[in-house]
Length: 336
Image (tube, rainbow, N blue to C red; front, side):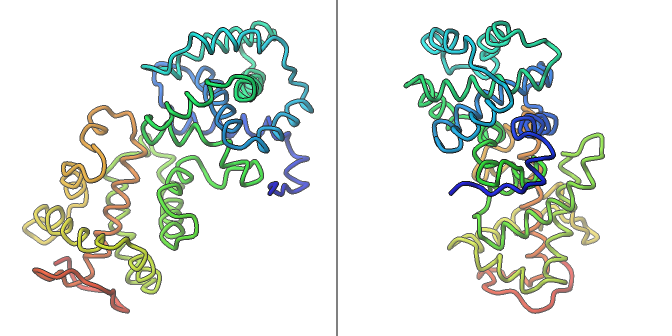
């Protein structure tokens, strides 16, 4: 089904220009390559997104192609550069940065000025769409390479596909959209976590370091306790959505991460609990990510989600053996 777009949205700014701006916001918020400028990263991201869109959603690719034509973006000599490039390019190492060679040739042939980020991004969109349409192995190789990427770059390379499904518009800021993808589309958990992350992000985005783990740990802990105290039905609903065996595991994590890090005065230390949780490598190599410092948004979300659940459990009497199977109507008391 073709996404519905409002007349106001269509008239305010062209869709290609809007998408170029949205990708720029993604790079500003995620900025994966510290050695490259925003003007270098955005076209790379635009090219890869367009290839992914063409490979997985031909209808969306055809629509974007029409919008680019309406914008006056012409193919030019793109195919002349794409064909030899696809034969020699290897998806190895920092292959995303390796796209600069192709894109510089595309811009040179189209005489796009170096300071025209919008023009370069739109041309990169078209090059990606043409690569998906005209080259047989290149899109498949990109999809195979995408699977091996870390969570943050994987998220960034699929923005066009997600935005097309939403009428070519982002639903939220890049980080909040990142949080969305960890949960089922229609789940109550997604609504709760996204709403909570939206509230926190609206504040911390003004900080010098919006991804400081301590901040996300503290706000997650507070958010979990508030959920039970003020929205008990909602807390019950997200608990009911947990996969089988997950609640007992969360109780084990409470015992092994929260209880040992609690101060002698009974004060909970969410940051210490998170760092102990990270050391367990629960589902991911968090210590490795923390040492490399290459995915701070992933760590911020992990700290927030973990402490949110720990905050919920802190309102319950944690038994020595059996895990709780339901949440009470009201919360209170100190952490067990």
